[in-house]
Length: 304
Image (spheres, rainbow, N blue to C red):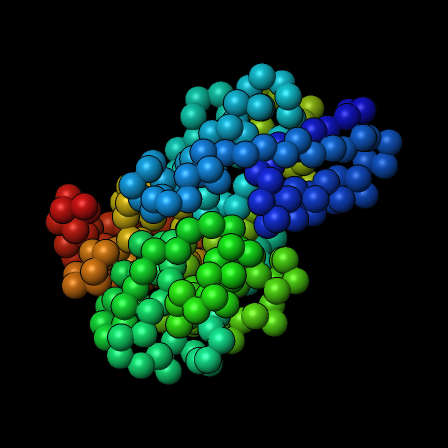
């Protein structure tokens, strides 16, 4: 192809991700002009309401899909944790890039880690998933919503609005802000969102020439893990409205997935793991989802 246009949100992190993919493509295809179409999504515009109340993370994706559908762009780059479990008809996810650190990061001015926060300390997060795990494990803390891009969230912390905040470690590292991380939460203490730390590339269906160009960016090990994680979330109706996490690890052809589903207040919390062959990641994710449902996850989901 002579040109490729990448649709991206205009936040600093989204633009870093788009520029990363742009640079990879330029290196692969030096004769192809690769550009970025920056866009503002509804998810970026509405910052005074939690995502779970205004439609979820799909709000970060819709405008980019419109650009793909209209031909303004050839591909869109997403954080995989923001991609809905079911893509609309007419769109394909054609590559999942190598994952950055999937863990959650603890950021604070005064404290070194989550367990050091005293009773009544205020911790900020935009995620029901993080909130439920904090409330379940640290019921003495006060959790308050925190929206905005990474810079906005850090500014609110620096202004003293919060004693600490939780962010994705991958985003901070990609933006060169790794020094702000006081500690990372272990997978056991804070199970990540499905796909956290991985980038996905979406295109309009029926464009094999674009699919062929970007397929080389797919990272098979990461893709297998993310596919298993997303199957857990898909079966359990994962969205911003559901406190749910899933994280997979691939070793020697064996895929191990840990996951949980909970009430937002952490009062009901079900966690388990499943293992299986990496040849069928969705089957491993399905096995974990079935385990969680057998232990009462359906009652939690119905209550939500």
